[in-house]
Each structure stands twice: as C-alpha cells, then as structure tokens.
Length: 316
Image 1 (spheres, rainbow, N blue to C red):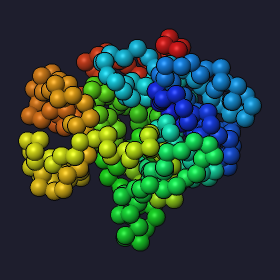
Image 2: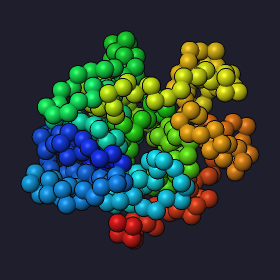
Image 3: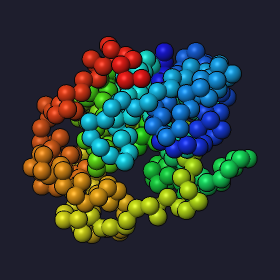
Image 4: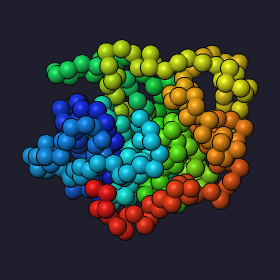
C-alpha cells in the first residue's frame, strides 16, 4: 500500500455524505490507498461505512479508538495512534473530519513525496461554510500559510515543522515509528500536531508546503470557528518572545488562538506537575521534549506503536 489516510472523528454527520465521497473520484489508483476511519461518535456507523466502501470499491477500515490512557473530551492523538496501528501505507496522510479533497489530491501528495527525498508535503486548509446538501464550498477564510507562500511568488516551498497541522499533513510511516506515534499526553493540552512536527524535524525529517493541494474543511457549526476559542496574548500567559525550532511567538503581538485556552486551566497544569516545567500546557510539553532529546513519546504510559502493530486487532 502506498498511502494510508487517517481520519479521526467523533461527530455524527458529514462523514458519509461529504467527506468519503471525495475519495471515490481520486485520480490515484484505488488499490494504492486506504482510508482508516477512527470513529468515536456515539452512533455506530460500521455497517454504513463498509457498505459505502463496497459500493465505491474503496479500501476503508472502520474502527473505534483504542482505550485512552488520559481522559479528555477529544482524544485526538489516541485516535491517530489507533489508525497508525492499523495503517499499511508507506506515506501517512492526516485529515480531519468535516473535510473534502479535490480529485487530484492524493496523486499530488504522492508525487511531491516521491520527487523530494527527505520531505513530505503539508497542504493548506480552506475553511468553507457549514451547510447541508447540496454542499457548496463557499470559502469563509483562506490559509495564512498559503498567503505567505504566494506573497513570495511560490506555490511549493520548504516550510517549518510548526506548520504541521493534521488537518492536511503527511509523514512516512518509517519516520513516525521512530517517534512512537503521537504524544497522547497532548490530548490534554492540544497542539499534538505541532509537537509531532517538531519531533519529526528533530530527527532530520523536513516538510514542503504544497499550495495547490488544499483540504476544504467545513466549519463545525453555523458560527465561525474562532468563536470557540478565547483570544489572548501570549504575554498574558506568562512569557515574552519564544523561539522554538523556527516557531516565533511574540508576547507583545496581537491576540491569537493558543493551545492553553482550549482546555480547563487546571488540566494545563498537569504538564508542570508531571515534568516540572516552567510553562504549562502544550508549551510545557515542548519545553520538556527539547530538554530531553532521548525521550520517546508515550514512555510514561508504556504505549509501544511497533509492538501494537504486531498485534493488530486487539483494540478494534
């Protein structure tokens, strides 16, 4: 298998009628890719997904997420690790739910990966308006990373590791195994994808931004997505300018979205308590990881991705 696409979801709609149909029109050969649905919605869609796969001649694996070690209202890292246990592809592509792709998406991602040794592609995310059928991809906002690339007259260019957003990103399985998957403690703090990208880059892997390969991500409700987050200055959270692997955070800059605002304050202090870090939340995890270069994700829980891949099926 050349490509495995991992899609975690805990929502009840838009999977069978909006997201999966975009895979049946792919120009990439259907025998060369698989779709792994890690479905933690309260309804059971296994039969519906399997029927869709048969009708459209797609390789789809449906499963529940493995038992999480940490309790969170969004065990995203745990779900993606579940998908990684069952993935057989050389290149792993991560896409969120409520998303749709263009017909040439998988082919384009594969070509960039194979033609650029030591790199895997990251693509832009275009937010589209929430709607019911018939679906229309009415743009609400474009990706600022794409705007930056285009401002330099480029469509594809090397990009920093903190651009690794799992709504449209990829990495080879052989590199992922070196990390031991996603750090599941970040399910408490968020920004598990930025941590993942940072870890890959510290191992020498690189990324290129492919501006022509967007994922269209439907906003989860009729309200704009950024209303779900508090707007804060990093300086208000206790630090000034921080530069971690090319990720510059200016405490004096404009208000912005931050991982520290997406979970209760007491949960964010877990990283300080466990690892005795200066900063809380996801930044505490990054701080600890930078200070312990030999640390392998999930050592504290005993999760071993290589071992689990040898025992496929135990959590399905």
